[in-house]
Length: 457
Image (cartoon, rainbow, N blue to C red; front, side):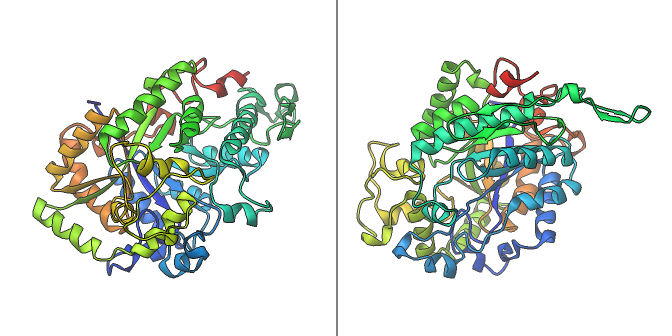
């Protein structure tokens, strides 16, 4: 059992994220997703609760697979409308001192030269509290609106991602030497030109001959997060990720994923035990088990099954309206998020799922763990999950924001602190995000253990 549970907050800059319909709850405020005050309040709540980071999921297309239309997503607020979370980070950092920020960036559609500048800038402005959640973007609508005829095939997107990361590693680690910036006022030299180097990258997909635009930040390379759970995604995570986000409602099945990722990392010459793995969780906590169950029942009464099917159709790349609710969900090869479909079609060979069951499994927990009860009950369940799965912590969703997050901080965190699993508030020293995850003295990726370090001068 770890001495400390890692805690992340899983959010998206939209109204309906992990589960659908709950924006209608009279106390929910997710419809304020486009106001700065809403997010500042959330960041301050997390900081008070000792959370390690705020994790922003993101997509760059409309969810339009269900019924062959975007209309169900628009009417149900299913990840529409949405805004760009990257623009929030510097403001949230100015209102916090220790909270880290993991922000999604697409290696399929972004340009590595510009993305490297964006994350380096945020690492400066947050004083080393930034992470890069690497995604390969799975929505056909995104591909079409960004100039492609169709979605790039699944495994090819990962090949693009491999070269993309090679480029940004070179920019972050190999372009500017540590002491390149001298600030020599007397001799009118701000940067020593001899200590800034062109990366001269020429590959099959990217050509970046020049220098990085930004001087070295505290972490240089932001903490690399990855959430791919397909077989190809797990191999990619084993090669690059420092923190992995898993989605599964079974600690036993999660344990298989954890072992697989860490074994693959060991085989790649990394220390698999050092990769931090976080399970998605939704937590409904109250003073008593009975009160928590009453809350859960109240929240579930707002569930929108059509909205949930609209989201799942986009994630799976399958129009679930073409089958009946009580039909079995079958596995097909798609270019969408294969790992999400595999949860219900491959991960447990002894179980079959109907479409209704899949939708209802996402009705509050969003396919992840669901813990309901008093602070002691939930803390016990969390400890048992980690002991069984081998994971290091939780990425906690809030489908009824800010209610669930506030309850976690005000009711559950004191119990976790009593057990020594979350730092006392007065011991929360400012650290880089990498140090918070891996320990003090590890502001930068470790030489010999992470591919980015191989480009370091």
